[in-house]
Length: 104
Image (cartoon, rainbow, N blue to C red; front, side, top):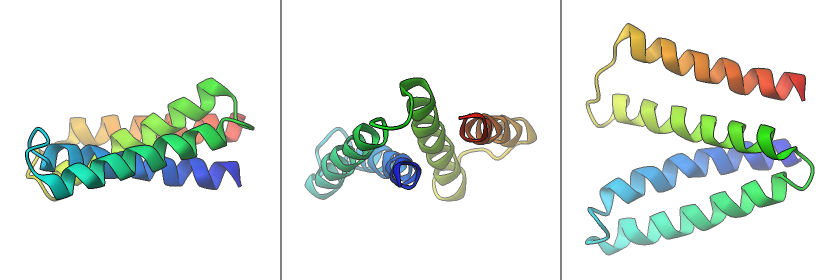
């Protein structure tokens, strides 16, 4: 169960990162509220998962999921460049996340 919660918390990291950008420096209230809720749920999920997953593994997986999700959102929705080098780096991050889970 902790791993499922950790994965959901990582996805919520993407949600709050996107909402933070959309809030335009907290000048837009709805994205600001999505940011706050996403952040609280993401951190709560991370805290719960780390009750049974080691700190380094849990945090690295959480950050990796959030970073890859945010980068993919930027490429798919925001027009960020999609290059072989960028995609290769995201694959490396995902490989590290999977490796940490498998080697846990």
